[in-house]
Image (cartoon, helix red, strand yellow):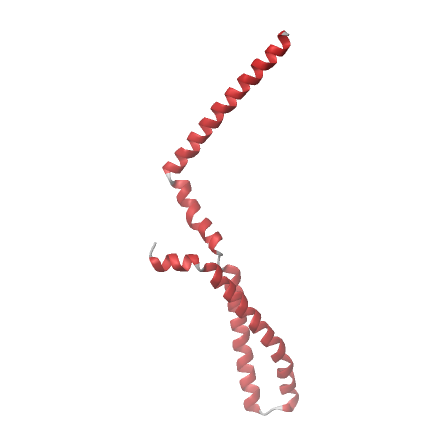
Length: 127
């Protein structure tokens, strides 16, 4: 992984939050522009103003959709870590061996505790 990829990897949550903020700002701007656009088409403004407002509306709607979809589909740093690291851990033989060794140790302790409990039960039955 290059330094730039690592930087972007770490900054994914920030990028996601920026997309949310831009979508929010554009959404608020659209809420205020829509009534103005309606009044323009009622005949309150000239043709050039109407074209400029419509061009702004189309651009704002496109950017709003872009930032909203970006915020949804850009994974957070934690999600990207899971996407990137978990498959590597699953295919790593050393990690798999640690899991097997841990299971063997736990099985050994469980068997030991079982024998201790059974021996205590036998002692109490004999008394």
